Length: 212
Image 1 (spheres, rainbow, N blue to C red):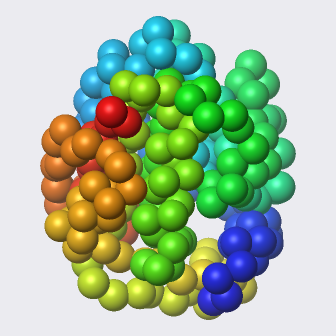
Image 2: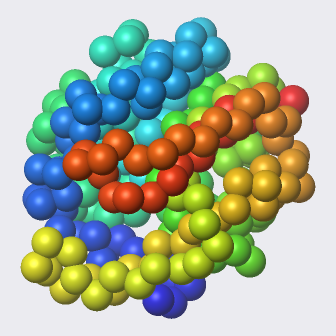
């Protein structure tokens, strides 16, 4: 896959409908994710708008909005944004690039970045995390999730539709080092095994990080 982020958006456009059908209700089957999002909602409450980064159909924004958090969604894929708007007409969704956010410094209270860093090549991760730090208010929070590993998986097909996607796995210690280099303070890191029959069989990490 090219480093050009536009290609990520194009690759997800053809599968927006199927992706939404698969993932929009996934939190019903993931109690630990709900627990972490409840904690995140408490941390960001009163800090300002909160971004569901790489929002897909908007399930994270939906959950936070239902907790009275001023959440909005951002995704590179135009079709994903359109689908998220259809499913969540009371939430704002915008098309944008996480590596070059069209937001002012110190303007967001929090970022929930669920499995979006997996499309950023290692060489660009620190700069991308610095961009996320830039838009957070001092004391703002990042909840970052990713698949644990040290390889890159390539997908040519997803649900019988052609795609061209690289899924990048990260060792937890390496991601922690990236966050520290980008200027975040790590508050807690949690790892879990996959929910069998619910999601892909990969071990996952969740990191609560804060902008000083």
